[in-house]
Image 1 (cartoon, one colour):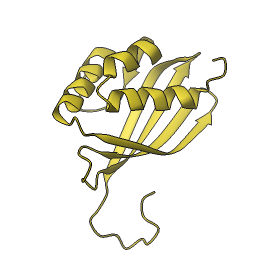
Image 2 (cartoon, helix red, strand yellow; image 1 turned 180 degrees about the vertical axis):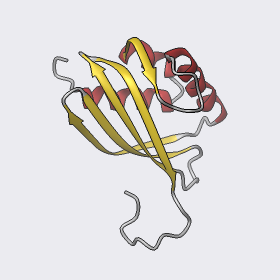
Image 3 (cartoon, one colour; image 1 turned 30 degrees about the vertical axis):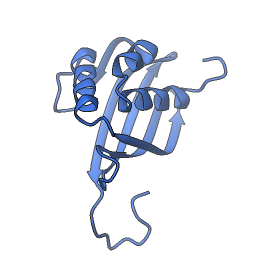
Image 4 (spheres, one colour; image 1 turned 90 degrees about the horizontal axis):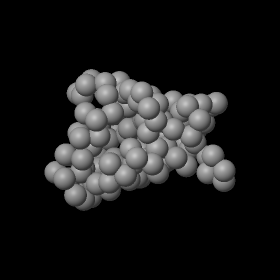
Length: 125
């Protein structure tokens, strides 16, 4: 990937999608045969991209703050704080990407809402 790492590509993909540029994210980073495991959409690239575009249109103030990115071979995991609106508590979201070369070919995502009160003084991030 020249000077860019797979972690950079994963973060760029998420940032573009969160900023209403899902189509750009897919054109830049998604490879042929892409599949995903989000239970709210069919497993193909088009359905998830359209869902990302609809979410961005409904939430133009969406905020994605990346906290950690880890790479293990062709897999990248990104922990983010995602807020649909700037003042929301939001959710902790982990995206796991599998790459084939420089292209994303598989994606998993899991999220957990940030609670109003937490007994853990360290917080979620």
